[in-house]
Length: 607
Image (tube, rainbow, N blue to C red):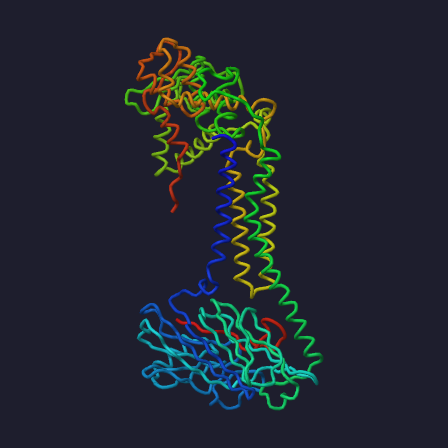
């Protein structure tokens, strides 16, 4: 594939990734995410009055059978029964009643661990609640499991929240949930005509002021805070119920806390918007990078080339620089080197009668270059006393390693050494032909990683923006994937070939095209033995050696007396077996200003 097709493919893939992400995030409604599960709350309604009366209505939707015995609502604030004597003077919640369907039992487990039942007073149920329920929990129980269906529960309380006031305003901060199952629909009604301003945590709820009340509606995915903070007229201080505390500048503290909260929420939303733009721009920046540093000069080269472009290069050097990535070699370079060493009479490759591997006899241990020397050393180390390497040995070691720790170590060492030979690189040699452009992608990775760190860091400053932050994290991961896609392509795509070596690269491509096409090879006479031998060696280096071998078989080209080794079966399987060897397995309180400072918390769940 030429470089223009490569950059076009990079652009298309990365643009599809970015466009798909932005489109998906744009069309999926917020309410469609985070509201699944075997237990959800279809509807949550809560009504608060100035006198401390609070009513909650939960509509639980149980979707699985024999999983839930208790559907509950736990409080982060101290919970008591209104029937208890000596309720504390500190902020607390007192349950006055539970309204449930016939046949069910309501319960409460108080802050001090006491259990009260509503309906069935069975002692066994009471013991079960005492054992299973959290402190500060109210709910309904069915020891025989709740069947899939809808269950409605209403709780009535007298709550005594912290109340801050001065001569200008009264402040309350009520947290209705903090850790809970998904609430598909939320409706909060604050019954008072003295409310001046409401701050919802997180934002996004619809707030409507009606006659004598404020109605807040929205939804809440799993474990998202539901908190209403509001300022009231100072005159309401005498009629409002709660634990009152006079503080300075109530309005200023409230506005300051929510200003910082809103700021970080805005930062999170802005970061997500920037991320959407970035995943769309990445493909265009990659194309720009290619145009600036990767575009090659134009050369005219025939589609098919039957002559070897440069015989001065060894088969391994051709494999390293011209087969695929100019800075990476593969196993074909190793196999081509073995064939070339046989031609040079440094080794002798002989087929085995059982057609399982080959015998390689070491004749001369001196190579012409460093890579040949490493290959010869590998053969020498693994040869027997007769200087013959039987590749069947690799298969035997790999097989026996399953029950022998010693053989496992041998097999692992052989695998590592062979894989080193089959993936050998030479930055200096490759660098004399081309510039590795993957280094130009590093700044892109840094930008994506910095963006990811920024998104993750926002969790500490804007925990209520978890959904938006998750979008940013997802976009950061997608950016990293986009850049990784570009990095998979050859190093020269965003680098370049030095001098006129790009023309030689095209020539080697044409030579490979020729060897890949049997109809082209068959045009040449089988009598030119040396030519066919060179095609076999360099074709193996380019990954098309099997195609040359097939053509030789069809044309009855005989190289047995030419000094070349021509395989008649998968002679390299012994090497392949050890190179892919895998070792066997061995065996609340509250009352604060701003988000999170509210009184209440907790939320609905099931067990």
